[in-house]
Amino acid sequence: METTGKLIIFSAPSGSGKSTIVQWLMREHPELRLAFSISATTRAPRGTEKNGVEYLFLSEDEFRDRIDKDEFLEYEEVYAGRFYGTLKSQVEHQTAKGENVVFDVDVKGGCNIKKFYGDRAMSIFVQAPSVDELRQRLIGRGTDSEEAIRNRLAKASYEMTFAPKFDHVVVNDDLEKAEEETYELVKKFLQL
Image 1: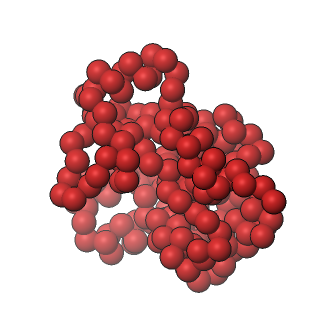
Image 2: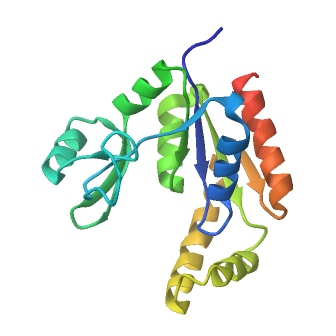
Image 3: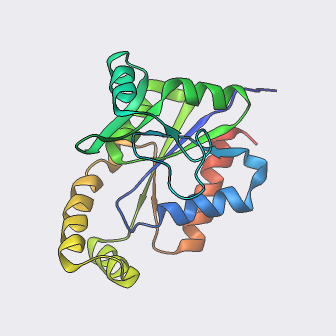
């Protein structure tokens, strides 16, 4: 029996339902041995967050030093001095424990991780049925201004052009159906 974990990459435009599907998968299917990738960040811990649990908290200098040493699978400077990224060593540590590591990343990060790991990783792009449906979902959340929604939709249109680069595209037009389709893809990939 294989004890080294595999990698499952999820990417999607904001509002596609990716996080809902991933959380359902992790909650309802413990037999999949899924564990979130623990990202590194330069931001300070919030509330009860602990180093090595929710995030690996690094100073900006330490983060930049690790970039220079090519220790990241992917990273992004969200704004000046605020970095987020995935350390190769952290992923190896998790898979060595037999965990199947789940990545919830942007499309570029998803493509980079897939390219690095090849067949050891499966990439899934979660897509809303249409940009109009995405707009309705973002409005329904009630968390964004009209300008923020416009920006998210422009970004979503760009992100959707990446869908063909992923192993699988799950269209979330019916949440239950999308969850089941994702479960079947992951189960098959893990050979359970």
